[in-house]
Image (spheres, rainbow, N blue to C red):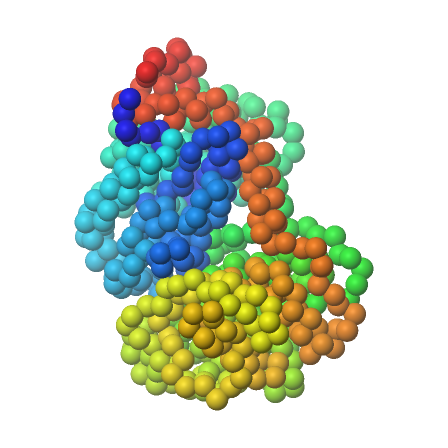
Length: 518
């Protein structure tokens, strides 16, 4: 038997087609069946990231997929991570460690070097696990990038991976997307596309049948699944398209009837780790909305300044839009403000940045008497400790900026490194991501916010577990995948191993049975 176990690639017709969730669902479904399975995304472009136990950095979606597999996050799951800092430059993370900042043109050259990293990490996972479910990036038909592609058909060709092509039908035009995506691929790439998956279908699936018949006649591929729309799948959303201004964060909730809190999360141009506010949205009586206008900031009970991949630039944007004045006004009126990572840095008195923006020293909002300095060494670590009230705190840190001086009360205490964050009345800030996932910490924080906001009738949900919400969502998508996707076909594709795929693809097309690969 080969040491190289089965793998397949879930590719998309577009960004945000549902690849991440379907990979998570396949991972959970296979894990529930006793399969030792791991996720893999060769190259991810996202400012939503997580820290591994060994202090590496990977995309947040791959950390979520690791949970689906019953695994701890591993840098092998996402060997190349791009974190955009502007429209033209990105910070590159390789094998969990900073690799440098590069422009788009430079990166095309470097991607050929990184292909060896990707190949090695995928081979390592295929040796260690029974199955590896790979996720593509964006669309598999970005033919302008095909020559240096390491995440989509370039990966599939190099590793001989069958491809499931996913489309989001809720946006319309999915049949054309599937046909056109396949048609744009060169013949050797087309040969690896094993079948189609339609995501987020509403209504009677039989209405779609004539289109699927035509699609099969014209492409020779079957549609292996039509997954229904599920509006309760939202936690750990990775793509920026999942966090638009004006959209309430979270799925449908049943309010308890008590007093409610409103949270305005400011949608910065380079927001990172948007998932930090999702724990708040899990609370049935907390309404969280992404905003970009001063009126919404003034009206909310709590304002959250989230992380940023471009702190100084996003701070300038806050000032140009009037949002900075609105944040300052509410803080001076004794109304709550929370800053996380880059948002915490913006609350400072002074920011010295010769690393990220090279702007030198600039004034922060001055709501915390703290000085921040950006350093070339990046802080990547998990956090475990407590808050000032003794509630346990856990999370992770990813930042270049460090506190060089603070005249404020410490907000959190790390068990190993000591004081972290700062507090002045209703204004609190921390470099720690994910801290509100902790149920005791979140409840303690929200009780304080409710008092400061004059919402004495608000009570956080006593039995709510964010970890359980996450697990429930993974089980939900696994149930959808198991019920609506041809899992027999998925297993056949995984059984294809490392050899050529024509017999399996022929079987999937309904022409003849696959040859044994024993």
